[in-house]
Amino acid sequence: MLRLILTAAILAFGTSALADVDVDERAKQVEDDVIKWRHHFHEFPELSNREFETAQYIADYLNGLGLDVTTGVAKTGVVAVLDSGKPGPVVALRADMDALPVKERNDLPYKSTQTGEYNGKTVPVMHACGHDTHMAMLMGAAKILTDVKSELRGKVKFIFQPAEEGAPPGEKGGAEVMVKEGVLKSPDVDVIFGLHISANTDVGSVRYNSGGTMAAVDPFKVVINGQQAHGAYPWKSVDPIVTAAQMVMALQTIVSREIKVIDDAAVVTVGSIHGGNRSNIIPEQVELVGTIRTLDKAAREHIYEAMERKVKGIADSMGATAELTLPLDYSYPITYNDPELTQAMLPTLQRTAGKENTLLSKPVTGAEDFSFFQEKVPGLYVWVGGKPKDVPEEESPAHHTPDFYVDDKGMNLGVRLLTNLTLDYMAAN
Image (cartoon, rainbow, N blue to C red; front, side):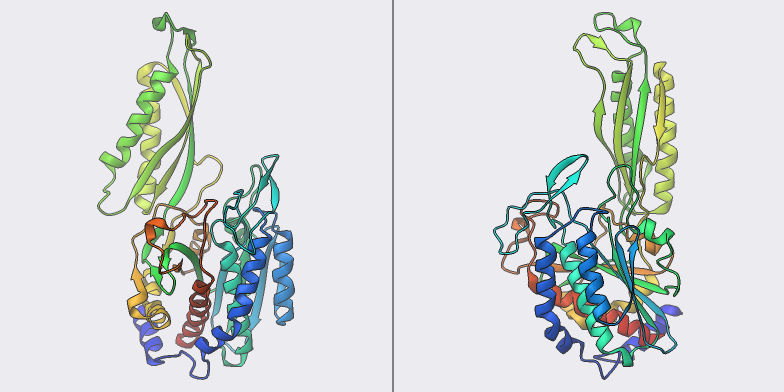
C-alpha cells in the first residue's frame, strides 16, 4: 500500500515533483562549483578518521548556506539540517569523505601528491574510490535544496560520513559510530538516500537494485593448536597444517553444498594462512584469516552456524583444538534497499536519468557501511555512471587502484538524483 501511494503521488507530478523547481537548470548552474569542489577534494585527500581539513571545508560551505551545522560527529563527520519550517518528512542524504592509501598514477592538474599515516607508516593518499565526487555532489544538492527552501515540506539532513573504508586499526569509525551517536535522531530521519560513482558505468546512467544490493561482510579468524614435532616424525605430532588444509577445503563446501546460490550469492574466502618457520618442523599453531560475504540474512546465519560446526568437527577429528572468532574485528550488515521504497522511487530515477539509462543491476559481494543507516530507516542506494562513454568497460581502471578515474561529467546526474529523490519523497508524503 505504501508503495502504491508513493508511486502514484510521484507519477502525478509528471516532470517535476514540485512544479516551481527546475532541477535540471539549477544543476547546470551549480555544475562548475561541483567540479571545483571535487578537484579540491581529489587534490587534498585524507585517510579514514583523519578527514580534518576535508570536514572543515565542507562545514564552512554549509555554514555559508545558513544551515544548522554540527561537526565532530563520529570524530570528523559533518551533519547539516535544512528546515523548511513546514511539516513533512525528514529526508537524509549521505556522502562518504575518506580516501585510500594508494599512490595516484593519473596525470591530472588536480592529481594527489598527499601522504598520510597508516599502520605507523607514511603512505601516499588518493581518492581511489570516488568519495571526492560524492562530497561534491551532495554539496551541490545542498545548494539547490537550500535555494528552493520555500518549496520544501519537512527537513533535509545532509550527512558527510568519515571512515567508510574502515577505521584505522584500534579505532572505531564510519556509519556505525554515526548511528550510535544519534545521527538519525533529532530530527528523526524517515528515509535515507545514498549513491556511489561507478567507473564501470557510462556517464548519464544510474544502476539500482531492490533488496540485498551489497553484501554483509564478516571477517573471521581460526587459531588451530596442535602438537609440535620434528618433520621427520609426523606421527609424534598433532599437525595443525594438515588440519588447516582440511579446514580450508571444508569451508568452501558451505557455499557450494549448503547455500542455495541460485537465490543469493555468498562467499567464504580464506585470505591468509600463517604457521611454521622451517621445512623440518611441524608447528604447534596455525592461523587462518578470511572473510564471509552474504546477501541474505538467513544465509548469513547459516554460514555462522556452519563455520562453528566445521571448524570444531575437523579439529576434533584430527586431535587438535581450534578457536573461531567470528566476526573478527568489524562487521557490516547487508546493504538492503527497501523494496517498497525502491519501487516507489523508481519513477524518480527514470525521470531524472531517462528510462533507457535506468538500469536494473545485479547485487554485488562488495560491502558498504551505508547498511548501518538502512538497518534503522528505509534506504535506497544507487550507482551513478562515471565512465566516459568512449572508454570500453574492460579498459576502465578499477576502483581502489592507482589508475582509478571518473569523468567530472557524471556528477551532474548525481546532483539531480539526490535533489529529485528528496523533492519527490517530500511531495509524496
